[in-house]
Amino acid sequence: MRLVILLVAATSLILVQPDSAVAEEQPNDLILILDASNSMWGQIDGENKIVIARRAVGGLVDGLPEDSRAGLVAYGHRREGDCEDIEVVQDVDALRKEALKATINGIMPKGKTPITASLETAFGIIDGQQPTSVILISDGLETCSRDPCDAVRTARQSGLPFVLHVVGFDVAGEDTTQLECAAQEGGGLFLSVENAEQLSEALVSAYEKPQTPAGRLIVTTTSNGALQDAAVQVLDAGTGEWVAGGRTYVSDETNPRRIPLEDGSYRAKVAAAGISGASTLEFEFDIVEGGSVERSFDFSSGEVAVLVTRNGELSDATVRVLVNDSSDQVAAGRTYVAASSNPRVLTVPAGTYDIEVKLVRIKGDVLHRIEDVVVTGNERTDVHHDYASGTLNVAVMRDGTLVDAVVQVYDENGASVVGKRAYADESRNPVSFELIPGQYLLKVRELSGERREIDASVMPGEETAVEIDFANQGP
Image 1 (cartoon, rainbow, N blue to C red):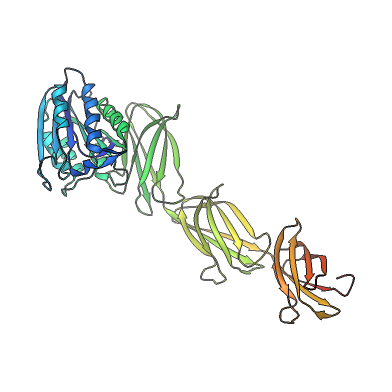
Image 2 (cartoon, rainbow, N blue to C red; image 1 turned 90 degrees about the vertical axis):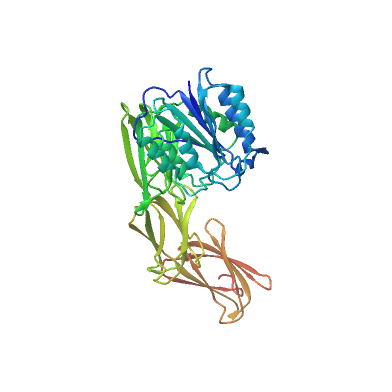
């Protein structure tokens, strides 16, 4: 068995495949490409990434069949800042496990990350008649201004019999479009890993998949006329277990995303990245006889215009757009009382929402929720809510003379709604309350200490006047 290994200083492994099928016979040569760029001295859980990578690759080597053939390419291990620092450390030959592990353990990170040139070097030592698995491990992206995806595509088009698997180590925060595209064009896996255990599992997974299934799920994601980054997960339809996944990004190299799958029944989840409130789209599908299933999803945003009035007139209110049946806010704004801002127009991803409207200056039960509002991409959805209110004027006096007093308004459930102070001054007595129509209890306390309670009704669009004279037995 022949093994060629390309090991680089990246800790992400993603499974990606092109549309063309890989040869039916299992690749039995392996090439490892080792990333020895300076960033491999970075640490994960207190341990240098190069140390983690050496141990993981050593574990892979220990598990190889004795009749395997393997080769090793390294880069960045001899000179700093040199994009040509690439070396075939071991040509593809009969596997000598201990010697190969000793060689790997002796490589010290130092330089740049010439991924593309390293791939081309690995392709150069492939036996043109012998199917080969190439495994690239890298903790970073190309730093020598070249495109690894294009290099892999060219090599495949030339007829070289290889599958490329890319393992990204500690690259979760980076745009790995080029690495994922390289794996996709190379008919292999892109696996993203974040720690030592995941790296070891990823290497074994890559080696045990010398060829990828012929079936494909092809997912295109767009938004407002442009490619949209999205995460795609594929689950077994029967067990719900994760099968495969990947990102579409915003590059035509990875969008549409082509995910290789065995024949079977699956459920997929597609979630737009970077769009707050965007719905996760789900669908079921079958792969039959190595065929392809294509799906396109448009995450285009739409507009929701919320008009708020009170007794038919524009009214000031806060507006919140929430994920349907939840309290998760997607967008918010305020209408004020000007036609330039009322209706309040908010841009949100297409989907189904609940909208909460709350009057700003009106007291009482002023929070209203409008449920199941459907927003369609590139369209406007109009929503209108009209509040009814009435005015309650309360005058407080003693023997016909205005007095200082505190007026507190309670709703019919006994909850305090609003309170004001009335003064012995015609400009501030009576005091006025704008309230939602209903029954209220007024509790009035003259500053001299006497108290009085009275019921009051507020009618929509009407004014209700109440006079309380502490000199009288009644109001």
